[in-house]
Image (cartoon, rainbow, N blue to C red; front, side):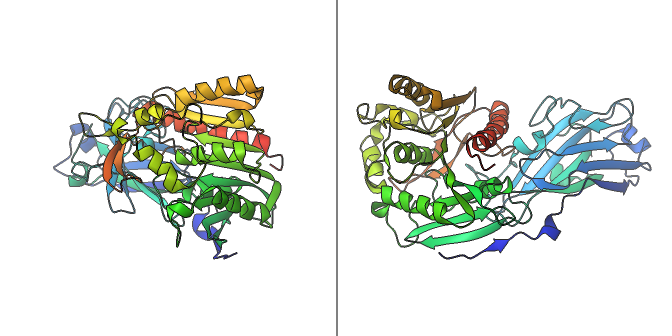
Length: 459
């Protein structure tokens, strides 16, 4: 096994209880209100805690020493690894004590409204004038998601870059906790990355399968390891020296065996977690494979209507034959769910009645990529008939879309997408509304972790 191991530098990631930024405000002739001018020699205090934490941890922001009933805008800004800028902002009014508290006070406008402590994260969107169809990806999990939090006078909608905020702080959100070890997997043609929690183990293991976006996606596995699971992110769309024709059931069985055999993994406490295409593969492997026998599995935004029974090449060929069922809306966004519903596989769909382990389905009812809700309903009927309905748990979230990510990730309704079966770049409609989708991501992540802990007894 190739073990290109790296461990996080704990000294760089040590959590701090809080950070207090004291900024002396000078008088300027460009102040947006007389009230702000009157307090320009006072000390404005911004409190953020924790300054460093995991991406699924909430942070608290408090602004003090404002004038009472002062209109202010809280603004977040992040530059992605692709050098695009993302922002969010909320409009607040200070209380009679001159304070704004993010987890108690209401935002009256901006990119989010209401009492939303993490609205500055989940409502982020590309700044005006950005490239179209962007999606925020984290590739280097050994660097933080750095977000600048600023306070502006008045209720602003744009022009943030043209003003100097009187107070600014930077927070860091990490996908990987101190001490988590990254192990590069290159064995038996299998390519992936195994993340191990601190300490000797052994730990319960999770095989982590993503969708048709391709590449090696590591951030969810790093986060799972930060919560005590040995998680292996598997690359299965065109890994090094392999073609789609070579990726069949045996590839995933080899990956499962590698995870099971690692000395830091508890071999009899394993789970499979799939998203989108990863869920399709998970259902097929767990229902039919002799090698893959996990203690539980989680499927996010998946379907049993597309059985994976041969190679990935043949799988995409079957879909391509029905490409005429793809619907393109008035915004030139591709909707894929109708194609999947039209597939002539009603008698060939995955026999989920053969699943022998607990299964958690996580779906958004506005999924425009996969008919995940309809699939879940049919799977429930099939498992009821087969006598294994007691193993099934279904989470369905109103107005959530296809891309259900870890908590506080921005919502992506439609993004650029490289279609696997045509190699054409399109704009794919994923669906969902920003606020309910954010709620779905936060709730689903908590319940996924609880589900894994419940069924992997080593936890």
